[in-house]
Image (cartoon, rainbow, N blue to C red):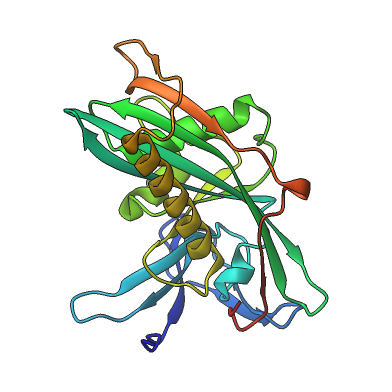
Amino acid sequence: MQEKKPRRTSYSFTTADKVDNIEIGVRSGKDGTLEVCPVTEVKEAHVTTQYERPKKPKILTKVPTGDRPAKVNINEAIADYDLLLAVDTNTKEVAGYRLSVTSVVMARLVPTPNAGLSCNYEIPLSIEFTSIHGNPERIGWVLALKELLRCSLINQSSRIGMVVDSELGLLAEFNSRRQPLFGCDFLLGGVELIYGGSDGGAELIPNKLIRKAEKASAALLKEIVAGAKHGSLRTLTPRSACTSLAFHWNRPSAGAIQHQDAVGGSNHA
């Protein structure tokens, strides 16, 4: 078994204005987790977990924190969200057109008696679409959020963390609403994008969730290409980002709890 490379967790922020001095505080939270508390007014801030590589560090997870106290344990840093989503898209060229499948994971974190966290999740929805232009990942984000909102599975008064594994360099732009996700569609109110790589960080909850979304997307795409799964693709207007679209809803299991990961302060399942 390959040894896990040493992780480094860092807190970074951009001040709201030009300043001569920067003040931050460090304290121990009620659960003993170390917290970084910005005193200087900040515009953007995030906690990142990474490991070193010869050319550049490998970013595993990046969680926005704004001006809130930032917990340097990534699994604890996401505990303040009311709901977590993970959205991933797989794409394949089929008969001269680009077929994509986006899968959505919905998860909630709940405290456990041993001061850890349980992550209960389900995969309610996958979206099949064909597109001519644009990044299918970003198109999938917009489609997923709109459909979840339409079906009242999310609302804009909740604080939602959405894990993605694409466009790492643009996530701050999307979160600040300085740039749309796609076309004229900006990120919905109440939603923050979290980066989680699907190819590493198995001990981190965001990475676990995005990997489950990636596997669900890849499996459904394979079934569709093989002709084993059929959706009712409907043709859209020429101005749409997609040329056709279909929704695949999964029946929830009893209690809608399909898995539980217990994690404590060590970040290990």
